[in-house]
Image 1 (cartoon, helix red, strand yellow):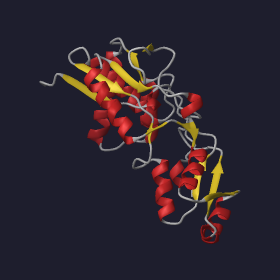
Image 2 (tube, rainbow, N blue to C red; image 1 turned 135 degrees about the vertical axis):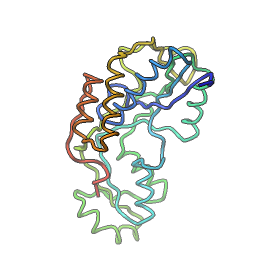
Image 3 (cartoon, rainbow, N blue to C red; image 1 turned 90 degrees about the vertical axis):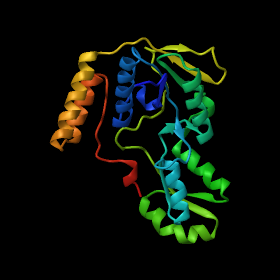
Length: 245
């Protein structure tokens, strides 16, 4: 491999992960620490990219186009960045990051952390609609036609009971060393090449066995992730946001 530098995208969910996506990115970071002994690597942890495919905000847009009610948790807060900001963060990490650096945006909890329900309300108002708060999914569905004619949009906001949702997001843990002075709007996590080679080997061999067998279960993957990250606190509720209205 003749590349001089390797960059990859991580996520804020890798800090104290509570879901499988965040845990998988955290394990990826472990492998990157191992690779950093033979190649310069850098990464970026950034927030939710607003209205990107697969995001809840992208789902809002699709629902509005189809004249469907909006459903969102009211107790889950997230940071959001624009596609341009996420691209710039990746470029900065790739071009200016030292070996093992992880870049992240400096976002204020008071100024930038917003709940899904709050952003749904702001988005609807920007489109010229007044949110019509409903107590149940059934009420929201039944009122959509009449409400839209009155420039209102039915919304069902609920307390989250889905798998792997943090109440808030974080970009780093108290065990990580930070450089908050190098850039005005970006922070940098400074890493030593700390990894457990035996764990990484076990992870790779176990995944390869699953692939060769052509079968695996979510339970076996959760167990493997728990082995890799002892503090991983995955709670399975068998519910997810896609199942909501």
